[in-house]
Length: 76
Image (cartoon, rainbow, N blue to C red):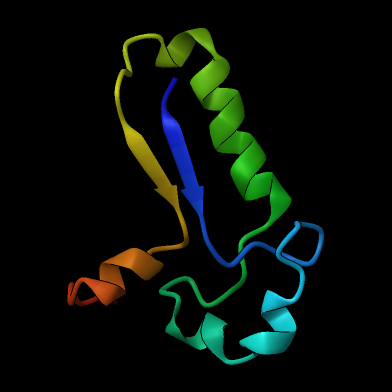
């Protein structure tokens, strides 16, 4: 089973206070928006599909590119 990491989920997630606590955060996310439940569900559906059968031992980060900006990698 691959691991899935998500930060900045939307108001429908268990982390619903993020929007209140960090209202300016989307400005620092390269795609400039909070993640949605659908963003997480789509990668989970893909990983459960036959198309992903050759993927093993991966940590897939679903965060709109936020981690890349923290690593000092420039974004567009």
